[in-house]
Image 1 (tube, helix red, strand yellow):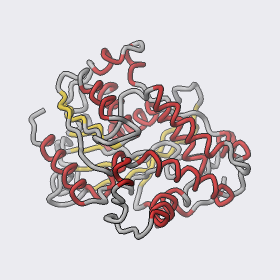
Image 2 (cartoon, one colour; image 1 turned 90 degrees about the vertical axis):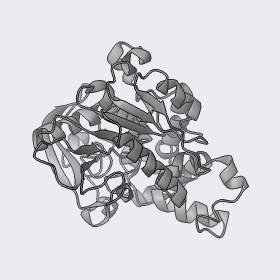
Image 3 (cartoon, one colour; image 1 turned 180 degrees about the vertical axis):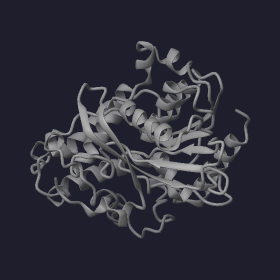
Length: 350
């Protein structure tokens, strides 16, 4: 167990904890005392039918995408009860660096899946709040993977779904890419199979990971037209250092590896004996699949294939040179486009 203030209440809160005893993982392992951190916005109504669930992306926390919540926005807390759950192993929920259970601490942390996250979230919603209906599940990237898992695993519960920049099954090409990202951390000199003394010892590895994301996270056009200048950076180097490296450097490498492994193995087809079309055919929700047109990580074409396998789905690509990272809404037009798409979806009867 080591300390990392990045994941503290001061930096990622306020958040609360929901506890699950002897939580069985899909790998066959068990977490004896699982704590799921979460935050909420708005008020759960008496009927408990005004719920929006917003799982986070890789490297994120419940704090990461709070900008999408606000009066007058699609995720309006005066109308909806919005829940941001933290993934297992993300640094805030039970994770390699913060667990007091030595058997799963640091490099001993068990393999966790997207399905494990969603089952834990389901327990949070049903046991903590008595929720049986969700108006919208949405998420970006790994959040989209969780959105698909929710819609397939609990089809009667999810009324609308918005997977944003993610696929229902990680493609072979994407999985190879993720293996490279994992390698940036695991092969670092000081990683020591996950048993390092402090996160700062892995600073170079975290910076290497950041550069890899800089190369694939935005579009080629973004760099060719120097759109980083419009984002407020005077030089390309400052964009790399003050945007990408600044994002990853405070984080815990083990937490990132746990999440990357989940990303790499995400696959809802397991619910239908490997038949992806059959799995997506289970979805009853109204779906707006929202890929990014210039995404090099989860391509528009890959996402379109998912759209074609869902009965109540509209394919809604998002144009932006920011590519996969348009979700951060650095350009106001990107944020507005996504928010308007969500308003349109929430207005559709489900």
